[in-house]
Each structure stands twice: as structure tokens, then as C-alpha cells.
Image 1: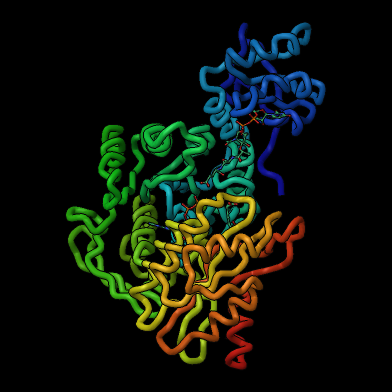
Image 2 (image 1 turned 120 degrees about the vertical axis):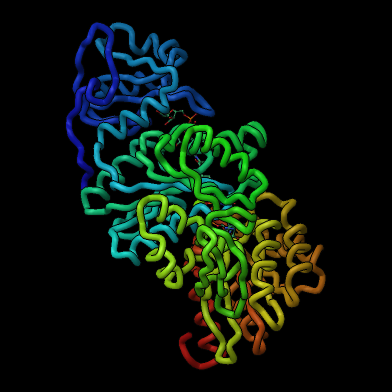
Length: 496
Ligand SMILES: CC(=O)N[C@H]1[C@@H](OP(=O)(O)OP(=O)(O)OC[C@H]2O[C@@H](n3ccc(=O)[nH]c3=O)[C@H](O)[C@@H]2O)O[C@H](CO)[C@@H](O)[C@@H]1O[C@H](C)C(=O)N[C@@H](C)C(=O)N[C@H](CCC(=O)O)C(=O)O
Ligand SMILES: Nc1ncnc2c1ncn2[C@@H]1O[C@H](COP(=O)(O)OP(=O)(O)OP(=O)(O)O)[C@@H](O)[C@H]1O
Ligand SMILES: N[C@H](CCC[C@H](N)C(=O)O)C(=O)O
Ligand SMILES: [Mg+2]
């Protein structure tokens, strides 16, 4: 289905031309290769080049107007010379583009929320969608796992660029979606990709090191995330902040300085949604929390202490955007995890559980194992590996994390890509000498599941939701969740 596209004048998109001239456009493109006749070409400064270098190509493909900055106009001077094409100069063309795209595609789900933070974005956005669905609303989430829920579509980015984003929001709204939760990646915020979205509430989960290849330093990375509250969320919006994170109070202060309402989450005293107790069992946890001082208790069929924080942040977003708190708390027991993130994939007939998680860094493996431990009375078994053609230094660190966190370890292949798989495994076992080395991932999973005694649990780490294994240039179908079921069925004689 097409979004509510139309021909629009630049003036309708908030783009004024010198001399009050008018120009109609049929679409907007940020990439010259995607320009069609009648498009506005947004020539943006990039990390590798200025989009204005491709202005000539965009015009050849039929662009009728160009949006850029001063530097871009300079770059495109020759290309534009002699062509009667209006150029809109903007201080911050990415933000101008975001606003123009919002006006061009017009419709958005009525109630929109966004979540930022280093970890937990996909989980929070998914839980928010599930809460709304359980309340009978037409809802979706948008992010790393694509667009999911009442409207579905694949995505290439966690936070898509504004043209794609607003086309999807418009299509979804037209399909009847009224509630949407989106992930705000730090790249997306920095590049103003979601500046045109009308948010009722926004959330912050936590802040740890990541993406320092893109942001110049830690402070710049924090500033990008803070932009969600300092710039994107309007003053009448509500900020939902996890104040347990060391940077949470700073984020809350930024929101308050804008006059936004604050809904705090965490274990810390004073949190509006405050975790006061958690009891873990093999398939989930009992969560005790207070809402404005009043005690509640709910069952969460979710593994990992941190999921309670994600759930309460999602509940905070639902409440902040208009849902009835009592109704929200009543549906929390129905929430299920994001695919491939601490997902219960199968269970042996002796009760031992098999989990699949996407942990593919030393810190993530450490966190995943530590989060599983309180759920497990017996031994923790882990099947893990490391991808080829990726950071080699993480391999021994992953070995050390597994050795420290799990009782029984099997090192296997992840996505070897162009590397020798056995050599990758050796670099891991260098730091985990007691681990078994079984290259074939299906066999490793079978052996891991076979080792499970009552009360034990198996974590299959590294590939999460992935559905293929890349060996050389080939991608073979491979799904950890499916392999876990097959292994358990083979061992116990039934499909789990
Ligand atoms: C680092 C980064 O975010 N780059 C984004 C940025 O591209 P860039 O600045 O590198 O672009 P460039 O290659 O220098 O080109 C400059 C401009 O010229 C245009 N161009 C380029 C070539 C051409 O022939 N014609 C043309 O018009 C490009 O579309 C671009 O607008 O602007 C482009 C258009 O908006 C984005 O597609 C591109 O995302 C790239 C593909 C990307 O991989 N981004 C990742 C890192 C990202 O955004 N990830 C986050 C999540 C991260 C996480 O949490 O894990 C996400 O939200 O997905
Ligand atoms: N609140 C949290 N605190 C600490 N770790 C978390 C939290 N939530 C999730 N994680 C860890 O981060 C992993 C990824 O979770 P999720 O996909 O929800 O995060 P994300 O922010 O969307 O990540 P990405 O930037 O990769 O899309 C989980 O598998 C888990 O190990
Ligand atoms: N986005 C990450 C995912 C890694 C997942 C892991 N299964 C691997 O293949 O290394 C990367 O490409 O480095
Ligand atoms: Mg994500």
C-alpha cells in the first residue's frame, strides 16, 4: 500500500523560495539514485561526501528542487548553473528535511512514543506495542526488528531516514494504526531523522559505551541521546526516565528544564514506578513494584532482572501517553520477549530450559549469563562462538566471560564468514581451555541440550534472531530457536 502521497507545493512543506515563487513536487529523495521526476532532492552533508556532489545526477533524473546547506550550494554551483531549479538553503538541512517529510506524508499514528538508550530500545518498544495490543488498541513498534504489530514492514535501519519513516507512519496510520512506539538510535537523533515525529512521550533506558566509531566522544554520544528530550519531545510531552542509570538524573534534568512532565522508573527511592522486589524462577520472575507509593505484584514471563526495568519503562510510556495505569499493570503478565533476546526456545522433559540470546560481545555475554543465573538452580551451560571478519580482540574476552559465568561451555561456530572457523574457535578457547570445541553449531546445540539435568539451563548465545549462518560467501539456513527445538525433540522424543 502507498502512503498518503500527493503533489505538494514547497510552501506547504514549510519551504519558502526567494521572491515567493511556488514549486510543486511529487516526492522527496535523500539519495540521487532514488530521485524520480518531480522530486525534491535533499542534498545532505554526509560522513563520506556531500550529497550536493550528486546534484547533477539528481537533476538529470528529474529533480525539480534542491534542499541543502550553504556548503552544499557551493559544491553544486556548477551543476545548478543555468538550470532553473529552486534551491532551498537551510541552516540544518537534515532537520528541515525531517519537518518537510512529516508535512508531505501528513498522517502519523495519533499516539506516538520513542525510546532511546544504549540497551533495551527494541525491548521497550516491543513491550509498549504489546501493552497497547493487550488493551485492544491498534499498535505497532518500529526499530531494529522492522515494523511489527498491526502494521508490518522490513527496515534497513533502527531509526529510518525521514522520508522512509514518514512514508511508513503515513501508511500505518492509513491502515488504522493509532499507537506506535519507535526506537530512537543515537545516529537517528544526531541526524535529526525523527525530528518531524509528533511524540506524546519519550523514554531513556541507560547509557554505556557503544558507537564511538561514529560519535566523536562519550559526551557527544550522550548529547545525541539527550536530543530526544532537549529537542524532539515537545514541552507538553512526558519524559519517562530510568533513574537507576548513573546518567538518568542528568537526562531527567534536561527534560525538566524543557518543562516536560517526568515519570521516573527504577529501584531508586522516589521513582514513580519503583521496583521493590524480584523473585526469579526457571521461566520468569515475580515483580513487586510501587506506583506512586502503592504496592503491586505481577508475574513476568521474562528472563533477566533488567527486563523488569524495560517493562516498567514501557508501562511508563503507555501511561504517559494516555493509558489507564490499572489496565496497564493488569496486562504485564502477558508480555513476551523480543525474538532472540533471552528467549525461552525449548524445554527438556526434565524441566531444564534452553534460551537463545543475541549476546555477541564480551559484555553482553557476561550480562546475559549473570541475568540467567538467578533463574537457574542447577548448572548453567552455554553454547557460544564469535563471528569471522569482525573484531578479533573480543574472542579471548568472550572466552573469559563464558568461563567466568557458565559452568559448562561449548565453543562453536557463529558466522565464520571468510575466516577459518577452527582458528576463530582456537582464539576463544585460548581463554576458555575447559570448553568443548564443536564446530558444527547444530551438533553443539544438541550436545549442550543433552548435558542438561533437572534444574540446569542452556544459553545459546550470539545469533539471536538470525536465520542464516554465513560461511564464506554462502548463507545457510540456520535458526538457533529452531535448532533448540529439534535438539530437544531428538533427545526427548517430542516437539517441544
Ligand atoms: C553513518 C550514518 O549514519 N550514515 C547515514 C548517512 O550517510 P552518510 O552521511 O555516510 O552518507 P554519504 O555516503 O557521506 O553521502 C552523503 C549523502 O549523499 C547521498 N548520496 C550518496 C551517493 C549517491 O550516489 N547519491 C547520493 O545522493 C547520500 O544519500 C547521503 O545523504 O545518511 C544516509 C542517508 O540519510 C544514511 O543512509 C546513512 O546510514 C548508513 C547507511 C548507516 O549504516 N547508518 C547506521 C550506522 C545507522 O544509522 N545505525 C543506527 C543504529 C545503530 C545501532 O544502534 O546499532 C540506525 O538507526 O540504524
Ligand atoms: N535495560 C537493560 N539493561 C542492560 N542490558 C539490557 C537492557 N535491556 C536489554 N539489555 C541487553 O541488551 C541486549 C539488546 O536488547 P535490545 O535489543 O532491547 O536493545 P537495543 O537498545 O534495541 O539494542 P540495538 O542498539 O542493538 O538495537 C539484550 O539481549 C540484553 O542482553
Ligand atoms: N551487527 C553485528 C552482529 C554480530 C552478530 C554475530 N552473530 C556475528 O555474526 O558476529 C555485527 O555484524 O558485527
Ligand atoms: Mg534495537
